[in-house]
Image 1 (cartoon, rainbow, N blue to C red):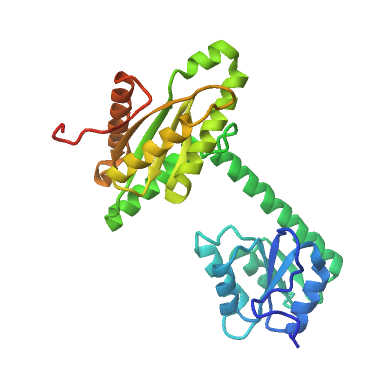
Image 2: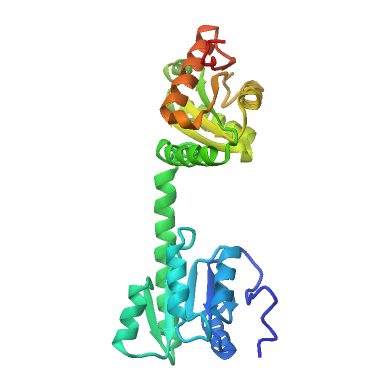
Length: 309
């Protein structure tokens, strides 16, 4: 019986976000046994066949899959192969739980991408230890990935991650014909803050500016610290709307002091032609930023069109 498993396939108790483990087995008794072993230290979800398992993984974040091998229809090996073939789910660790004890079966499990193999009948201590080991490893890898993508001071995307994301946005714009614009933003006279009151104060200003930038751009695109006092934004907007967004950024930054300092920004804006690539977009945005600074700073300038207008 699976009366006490809800319609979403969840056996979790309430409370703060915990790691989510998907238990996949066509025998409800095994689902219950594994859920009891894991207890309330994790959120447990269930699937009673391979197709249901793939649907669960599609619909919500999963941190680990405990996967039976022998199931009606789509077996565990096939489910694992499909998970590993999809870039969106390839990083989810899979532990096979099976009554098959031949070395060839275990070898096949590792060959299709599993990280571990637990034999039935399973021992509770072994299940807990192996699940916790994989969850700790996944959390560590996710933290390393986050650190590799994030500017440590401001918490924004770093230059490396922005380059990767911008390349993806260029590809999407090329494929769909949708709009894409680039903003290059520079804090005016930032060196004077560092020289006058020190780098700690300067860092506080950078953090404050980053928060205001991210708050204005929100879900419209990606914001990154490009280096020093310079920030970049890639947004799915045409050039006119991107210029309006830049003006909102400028107004928000100058609206009140940051770390006790009056701060303004100069911003260069350009619509992006995906066929011309990232380098051309940055050249145009940088040229617009230079014009903003030459015109007295604290302003937004739209890049000139190809005919110079």
